[in-house]
Amino acid sequence: MTELTDEQIALKDTARRFTERHIIPNLEEWEETGRLPRELHRVAAAQGLLGVGHSEEVGGEGGTLLDACAMQEGFMEAGASGGLMASLFTHGIAVPHMIAHGSPHLIDTYVRPTLAGELIGSLAVTEPGGGSDVAGITTRAQRDGEDYIINGSKTFITSGVRADYVTTAVRTGGTGHSGISMIVVDSNTPGFSVTRELRKMGWHASDTAELSYVDARVPAQNLIGELGQGFYYIAEQFVVERIFLALMGYGHAARALSLAAQYCKDRITFGKPLVANQVVRSKLVEMHRQVEVARTYTLEVARRHVAGDNVIAEACLAKQTAVATAVDVTNEAVQLFGGAGYMHGTEVERHYRDARLLPIGGGATEVLTDLAARLLGYS
Amino acid sequence: MNVVVCVKQIPDPADPGALDPNTKTLKRDGKLILDESDSYGVEMALQLVDAAGSGEVTLVSMAPNGEVSGLRTALAMGAAKAVLVSDDALAGSDALGTSKVLAKAIARAGEADLILTATESSDGYTGTVPEQIAELLQLPSVTFAKEIAVDGSTLKVQRQTEAGYDEVECPLPAVVSVTAGVVEPRYPSFKGIMAAKSKPVDQVTIADLGIDAASVGWAGAGQEIVEIAQAEAREAGTIIEDDGEAFAQVVKFLDDLKVV
Image (cartoon, rainbow over all chains, first blue to last red; front, side, top):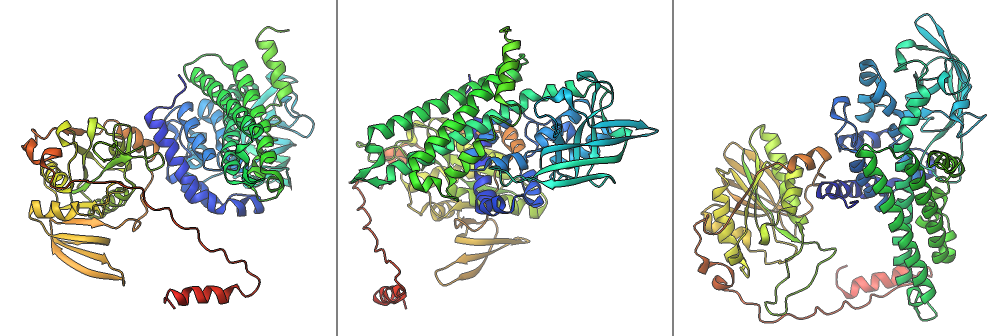
């Protein structure tokens, strides 16, 4: 059963109205300037939106992944951009390792202020030398007394320019999975710097950084959980991250479909609305079908995850399904808008650009397909 | 300070359904939502209780089939409890019948320092219920409030007028209708939404309120809907292409309307 509960529908409505009031009037400006104001994090937190899906013990609002899914649907339905979602909800990938394995010190210092909208966190795993190959990271943390000294670099780090701290994957041991740990690095640490603010095809409202760590000295108490467990901590969170990216995928698609359908009813060509043409109706209904399949499958995988099932393979497949839907449907929406759809500033054009990131970010489709193949026994 | 807010649960204006051809009234058998025009009164009540530092907001509503969806929205905003009157005998109630029921329900809600309503509902638009409730409860009636302050046992209201506003004072308790748009209704938070699930809704029938079935519903309605007709479609406006002289046409247009 993937229908939302009455409470989830109410939460979705709150998210939709919040987006319409606080985001949409400013979104074009944020897309232009390439970053969100800190105040938006505070306002969203005051409304309780940053804490949904995180327990009250760590400063969250409570609720499950399914509640967070309903909320995210509300944002996307109201026309939020991919960059907005990635940037406002970066804590969704920055704090879960701390919540699951971190000390009370880390919870109080980083998690609570982040869920209160006072701090901005980001997650740094990817390095210039390798994207989805998490086990191959080379950024090294060397123990020195009560500190770790970190050297290395990270790239494609969402919210990395604005971040107050970066949850960083580092190598503390030998090669491979077991040599990786997670540590929290304050962005004002000497030796830590943002070396470049990266410009992207889409996700314009999200700042993306290249980070450098040169003899960055970080207290050992900032280590998350146990030494050498970092890879597993990261992998634990992948299911949720992939489900959120799948949600973003069908969210883009559903919004683009809605905009295209209205346009096709309003746009008169050759003396009749576009939608009076069978070929147009066929496109719209095919887009609708893809959105329905992606949404149903994604929410079902989310439901099974909340129920405690192992859905690592299914989360890969849900992401693949939904991001392929996002790419296809936004492409068709631009096509239906014709020349207007190719114009910068048209909302469907933005969804088209934003959607293109999804088969790459959070695990490339090719990597996830291979992972699913192994997990499902096709090897 | 205890505030009672009368709220109506109406068919979603985004999906308004249809009129019943026999009764000539709006079909209300589906899911209902909180009338947006009532959300301003709820917000104002919550602010007044916050400012007073004690007390609570109680909702009063009348709806068919025990419908509570709209009430849950207002409870999620922060109201403490609700009284819902739901009774088959209420079908067809006119404005006065509705006022009789709401007045009794308000009395059941407990001691109230203030009763707030919208100026009119978004699906009925009679705009007479607030004044009728005041009369039935023998309380002062103040209408079209844009700002409300409480000073001891005195109510100070800025009453919206076409030219600006009047300053009105009256003793508490009183019945005040709140103009739409004068405050920014809060959105229910997730915690509020979850808490609303367990807030008490006292569902009662007209018998519980001591109301004679003959005085409400179709039986008691003094008002009859004799005909319903499609509203005339709005005429298309005039589009002026600006060739650098458009301002002159705009000025002429306004001049013809005698507004400049």
